[in-house]
Length: 614
Image (cartoon, rainbow, N blue to C red; front, top):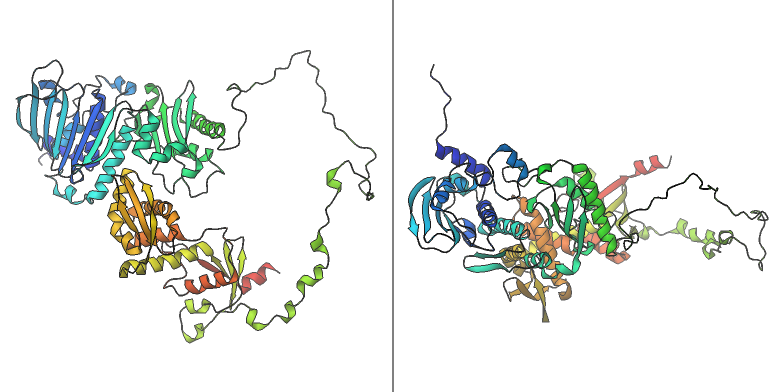
């Protein structure tokens, strides 16, 4: 029997490695920009064509490479960062494994122009699918200029599964933001199809965050700064008013490397306890500086997951630091943090006299004695205010036994004739009751129906907006004075993608700058002053539903609009409003559930109620 185990060819091995390191154009941008940072560049330019599918160009003014280094950099595991295994635990650079360039060259056409400062001529290297096409000396600026063309040209299956240009560009922007946030001392530009998206000068961290995200976010950031022997924590946390419905603006960095860490995210979220509703995510940009010996950054191919040696103590320090910062800036109740940052514990000496606590007692106090009208009691609790509602309380129940039949809560029922279950609960005109300004209670033939008022309104609005989108019958309310809105780059891309559907709903939006828009009109049932906030919420909710691949774009817009427009809990409703909501709900095609599958109503059967009262 012949041997069946053999070594893979280098080209195949490189393609397999590329599958782990290079997943999409954003992966290429991440690796090359990080290499530029490691090379000491103070200016990095990123140019894309077709979201990077056709072209990715990274130009930096870093150290550059010699002719030999340029050629060696495309070999697997060729790196200048480590020499022995122990070096893995002393890493401060972003790249170190020597896999990125080899992986990129395995699945794309790559051109490199690079020159060191001390060299008169630079090197041009052209590679396609791991094969070197040419290498020669040229005139070029100091630094490196990478051109990555036709990504996955030799792996058509991988290229086929890339998403739309808009989606892939959003992934690129995410990676670009993560690197740019760690290097405020480096100037960055990002352009797509010859249109500039970001132009970031050298600046401080707060301004860098503001340029990358919303410019007004600076007004809602709280500084965090804690120095300990285990970890140094710095950065910014957001005030409760900038909390989001998703975790899109939560960033952790360890030694200037972006990381995902759910355990530490929980520490931050718990610091916001009772400041945010359960479905809100705090905004934060937190930088951890730790000894490289105490972390392992080599546990994931993309190096976004990091293992810490002392996670439990870092968790506690992080949680306390966030609480302290929220307290310092009066975001949450706090102690006096102007005092020295320590707790003084009293020390008992041998000659310290310990006295029991003194309790003052009024020996003349008689709890059964009724005080006279002119006397004053030493205890304010002995005076019980008179409650006028307690007088003539019997009259509250007068008339109930004679209540007319038309005021009783009734529902149509015809199940014995084989009709839908929904017809058994379809309401008619009646009196309804509101519980805790959250639920609507009304009786049905089988018992008591409880309706969630927000979900009911959401269901009604969803079907209305979906009808308008499908039939393009949205009514627009125009305004003499436009409302301006500024978005970040990813939000602007998303807005451009869904703009036709927003127009069908009644929005009239004009682009006035790269990331700036004016709202001239909005759907007739929305106040124009509320339109910017509504639009931001729509974009946020639409982004949340992007992972639901089977959901049509119009369904996502209708769902986002319904969620953004539905009445909130705590809204007091009159009987006519409740009845109108109930009638609208049961006119829907599916009144029992929201569009994302949450129950709108439930029925407590009469038998259940009777069992509770036995």
